[in-house]
Amino acid sequence: MPTICAIGSPWRHHGARLRVAGVQIHIVLDVVHVLEKLWDVSWEVRRAGDPAAEDWVATRALALLAGNLDHVLTTVNAEAVALPAHRRQALDGVIRYLTNNADHLHYDQTLEQGWPIATRVTEGAVRYIVADRLGITGARRDEPEPKPC
Image (cartoon, rainbow, N blue to C red; front, side):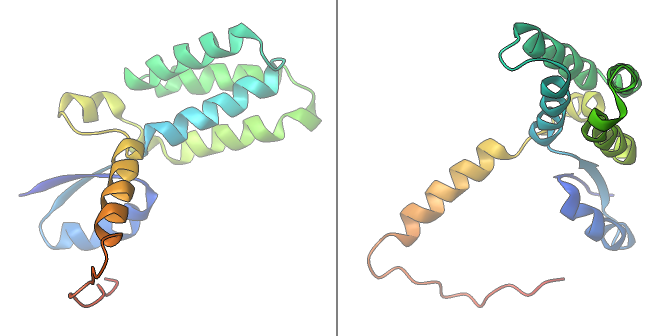
């Protein structure tokens, strides 16, 4: 059975269809998006510019990469409990995000397979390659537009 690794939530919609077609799909959330969520938590509980914020994010990021989502959820929840109710909304949202996407946060397994865990670099490179190609005078697209599945 062929296997593909897909990064990002749009692949969830295609996963069932691919499995029916005999393709095993491993979906992983882009680690950069998850790190942004961790930064949201860190800035919510610390003052802007606090050097401890970077250490806090780095520690949780390493835990995620090692497959320790439970540890990350426990520490984020502990931070949330320590806040007054009116400041907990952002942290509760991050906890929900991590919990709801737990099946797509197995970065340790993904890295063991040698698969990518982020697309930002690729997206940036493709943007420039496409812009360079289409920026050539007279460049045209000869193929018909792809149709959605």
